[in-house]
Length: 368
Image (cartoon, rainbow, N blue to C red; front, top):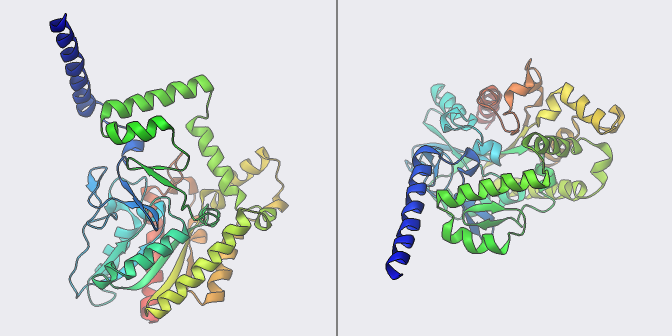
């Protein structure tokens, strides 16, 4: 009996190991799982990215940001980019295809500062403007001793940044390296730390969620995308500006940007804003489709409403700004600039916005 039990146990363990090996070699996890383990908790920021984490065949740098390790050569001039997943480059596998790297390459080709320029990209997926400002203050006390940027650019996503600033996204938790915007189950809290790195466990969760969605008839990816587009469209609703969370979000946005500008002035740094539009702002057919589905008349929304709010904040505080919306509207097929069912910039989108941002930076440098 004991021998039989040992054989059964050995068979189970062997089968588990073989299954794990097959999954790792033949069935890699889908990209949505690529960030598993990428995040760590932070008492100030709620979370941050893990230094040297392997991400889609590349690695985050020594400080936990996307791109190669930053150069400590004191002769190099630095420009800092702050933002969320758009600045990070979510959806683009190679960092060399992101607007941050494209702009760095072009500025160096043109020898704008007579010295090598390095863009230090602080873009972090899911961050609000409040978290980005806190990250700046953290960097002042540590990283800026070695990498002291002359220019600080805030990339503000008009689709949801003001909405996120109502809470600051400071409630987000990290569960075994993953972000959780909800209260996780007791099972996940116990099992994820123990089994989170196993492919078999991860695939079992994927299959479970798929079966659950079929059983409960949950939203498809297309339906989730429609929800996200409706959320972005809500930023354009004229009547929503005076109600929470949008009202509070815009108040917090104005407050945070004003404080950030003052902090940069004290540090003798130039602070500037680049506005990134949502697809719903530049695709007229998409606007009309969403409005029709939701019974919203053209008088009830304004596609440039968030742009005007940021412009007002920038002018009040004497902040240089660039609105990418006009440039992107000139594209014959705006939808090509964004990844379908994702909403982030495609490689073409990164390429299109690089030129106006590069020109914006060059103008700031010339006017120093």
